[in-house]
Image (spheres, rainbow, N blue to C red):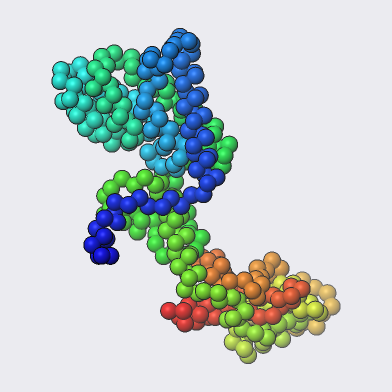
Length: 377
């Protein structure tokens, strides 16, 4: 029975992943947008007291479909200002031309819808209500080119103006840029701009979703996959405990010896109560030893590390003089999945882990993260 019913599942509507607040926001916006366009269009037509029977002279029915797009899916490429205004206006012109050229309204309507879609593709203003606009003008025998300006274009402009104000006031980006570059994925996405373009090219269909939102959704899905695979794994579960530390006044020679002896690349710098005040890395030593010049670098490094014995001078003598003070730390309870972007894209190789009262309890390194990812499958 289950297999027999499965072919019909494609006909069932998908559940909308929007809450009641968003639904009411869209419904209220569409109503206000139509009201705004209708009232101003009636004034512009000079028919301030026109009865409902004459509404078609200053307000066109396809505008209702446009309102659904502008207020319910403002990020859609089909709902952008040029799509709304250009699509409705061009389609109205196509419908008028077909009405004038083809006597049979059925043939005129069919030809108008097909040509309108082609024109909207060419002018990059694909807008579904444009098909209704072409059908309305062709089947209704509209013979005046002025109809494309008023009410078609004016109605559309007024609706877009209402959409701009309402969407921005309610926290929705409109217009939604359709050619913005894909931002780096927050979750360290494994795909590139070129990968996305290649996939869209093979798909070869119109997507009712802007490219940047599609990339963001794919990156978010990858992030959710990371969280699912890593489960409830926290920093405390995989960190290296009892890390080797130094203090502000630790001599450079001693700190260098610790790095070499333990084969590590960073030492947290802590105060008397084990709070992190900085971090000193191999890179800090190399940078302060002026190793950009390759000649004699080993001698310069030894000279930099060796204590001079002087009480005053420009040469750094202790860790506090070369450490990095701005240190990113993470709590022991923090989910590991949240830190993956820092290692994947942020350039971090080690992050101190703190517990209660911000005291150092461990060190999280790239090796720890890679090992946990391998264990997670």
